[in-house]
Image 1 (cartoon, helix red, strand yellow):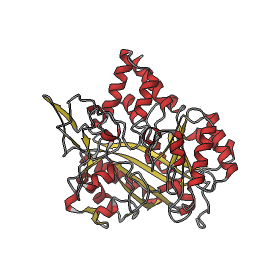
Image 2: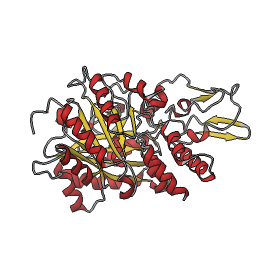
Image 3: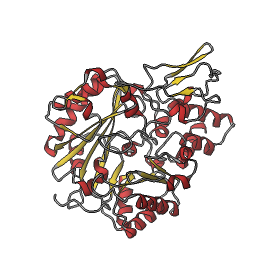
Image 4: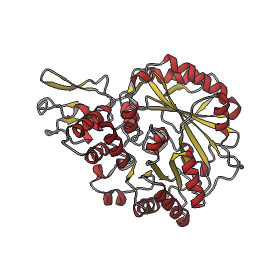
Length: 239
Length: 207
């Protein structure tokens, strides 16, 4: 995003609307720090500018991934849905993506609200890839990797800054302990934050398989959850 | 929307925050899903939802009105609604079960309570996702009371500085907490930002 300086009256109304504080006022000039801007489009959509001075410049690769990963209204080619993730557990009753004996992990890099450089995403991806995970193919982040087996990203993307980038994969439930310890360790090496999710299919007795492991490991988990209530059809046939 | 499980706050505060989401699955049941997604939104509205929205088309501020949100729903949309009490949540879940739209429905909120509501509505949880919190350089995060408001937009479209600005306006008496909540709702394109809870959180901040 850019500010047309011929139109801008430096009122500063747009400054607070930027989720990553990339709009700055220096003396009598309001400008956008393009290195910090994640191209989310929030400032322009807010319609707060009295002079319509916020203008979307044409984006070229690799900067295009900032918009893809930050502007919620951009639809990803891989998933065909808006938002930065995939259907993940939300449609599990029809896709069977998370089966008995497996858990899903999502590492929501940059969330909430801090944003992330892709080199930090790579650092975490390479750490978890050591456990031979298969990153979710429908997630646009996976297509940004030069080598999904190692978690290495295309070099030209590494310094791009995005509001969020989600690493998604499934692991056998018996690997949960090792994986969560590994994620806790790599978290100490990055310059941003991430939100961490774990999911599993409810067992026949009504218990939540991953919950038992978390309790055994002494890992905090939230009192609130996201629950798929099984109304999608046709139901996945299998375990 | 993935982030609905990461909504931060006290248990007491989260008792007034329930998110219901409906979506089709690509290549399985997405064709012809638009009328069903519209029906979902109408059911939510009939059951007194606080907000509603369409993650693909944008919220009512962006589209002009709630009617426009309903009219413009497409086959691949992900639609949402928020509720502020369990009675309405049970009501919407019961009706969704009865109408059997055939699309996936996901409910976010306090686990024990959602499970109880499922039971009352005759539904069984199929898959459950927990938040393990926030890791990494967490010193970069705002205070918990601000995060409680900010995380109601999982895509982080509601800027922390905007929240501070609105809270300050309420503190000075230039706008009400309810008006501030409505302003903060506008950037949340999915319409999943619970304005009722936001107003309560802002009132607590300025008290």
